[in-house]
Image (cartoon, rainbow, N blue to C red; front, side, top):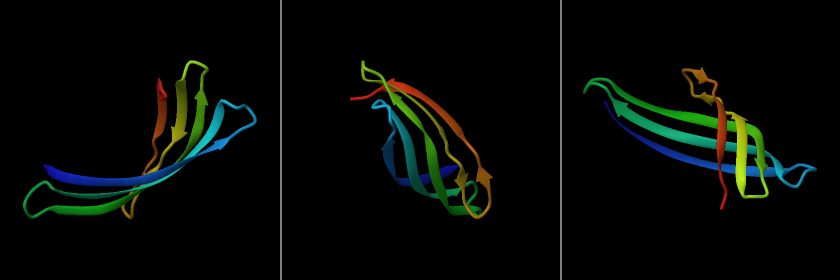
Length: 88
């Protein structure tokens, strides 16, 4: 299978009353083109909105949990994400 995916997106953090907590919102679009066989060319656009919670620590670590459904005109695929990392 050969394929190319071109993503584009934007996100925005909404500050809560706690200075280290945020509501994280995002919206993305992914253009996908692939062909499993020469006669089966797949071309689709996926929409990827997201909403979640983000927390920063005093040591520049972060924790995130979010809900990100992926959908197009054929299906809806719900995804829940959990992230730990370092912010810089």
